[in-house]
Structure formats: structure tokens, C-alpha cells
Image 1 (tube, rainbow, N blue to C red):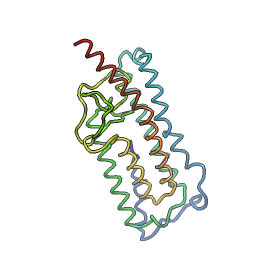
Image 2 (image 1 turned 135 degrees about the horizontal axis):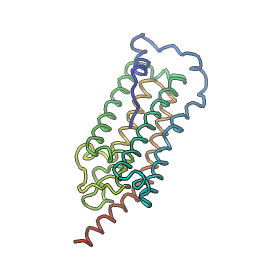
Image 3 (image 1 turned 60 degrees about the horizontal axis):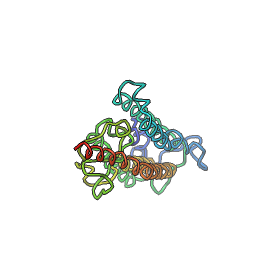
Length: 241
């Protein structure tokens, strides 16, 4: 999920156009980048991979489903934890940007408009992915788009529900999966990139790169595993028939 756009943060980002120039930097906003730039990664960047370890453990043991009495309840609990971590990551991302110097070459209305456009496109991909997959299908979702060949017919992108045995019967091929591989991940990346450009923040650009790399590793880490889940499902269905 992309940045949580607090009203205060939007007002900070709009300060350039409202004041006719760069907003003044408060104490600590000048000089070299401080260690706070790493906060979003600590809050959630690598958390995606940690939750995948939990999900794999659940797939092997079904202990979370047993503890909660239902795979759906266990899956929703894990999804809720991921959502809260993403909210925290977005907050840390914004605070890291506000505590660092601004990039003068991006501190203008044109760059602000480009950032706003990226934010809008990313929001469309994130929200449409959520609507297409549902809650249990959203978190940890890979969501393959056109040209995907590693799934058996009828399957769709990996998600938290896969690990809990909540498998879709038909592949999701509607927008945005009809135009883009992994639209949830790349929509979220577009959100962070747009948010960073709107704040004219080099720290935000750096952290967006970290987010994109984390998502790329997550895709490479999970695609073979979730593909195997659906191959097993297809094999079992073939044996029963």
C-alpha cells in the first residue's frame, strides 16, 4: 500500500505553490542526510519479507489457522498487521522526508504536478487491485498480469489467502491485472515516488528506490513458492477427476 496522505503532509507539500517559493527549512532540514532516512525501511520495507516467512510457516504447519479457529480469521489478522505496518511505514517515510533537505531542482510547480500525477496513477492501481482481489487476496499479493505463464490455468497472483488454503478458482484478469504485472506493488511504488517528488525530497527518492528493490526481491522470493501451491492444487483436482 502507498503513503497515507495526511492533511498536514499535503499542506507541507503544497507550500511551494502557496508561498511562491521554496518553503523555509526548519532546524535540522539543512546539511547532510541524517540516519532518520532509514526509518521507513525499519518500519516496513523488510517487513514484507518477514511476513512472508510467517505465511510460509503457516502454509507448512496451519498453526495460525488452528490458533484462530479459522483460516479466514487468521488470514485477516495477518493482513491487518501488514496494513498497520504499512501505515507506520508511510508515516515514517513522510517524517524522514520532512527532516531532510529539499532538492531545489524539484521544488517547482511542474515537478509538483508530475508527483501529483504519479500519486493519482499509483492510487488507481492500488485501489483497483484491492477491489479485484478482496481483503484476503490483497496482502502479500503478487498478482500477475498479461503474459504470465508460470501459473496453471485458473490461477492468479499469490496472496496471503494462498498460504492459508484460501485459493481462488478463477484467475483475475480484469483491470489492472490486464495491463500490468504486480499492480499493487508498482502502484504503491508510484505513490511513494510521487509523494517524494511533491516534497522535492532526495531522501524520499532514495527511500522509494529501497521500496522498489524490496518489492522486486519479494516477487523473486515468492513467485516460485506460490506457483507450487497452485500446481499442487491443480494436481489434486486432476487426481480427483
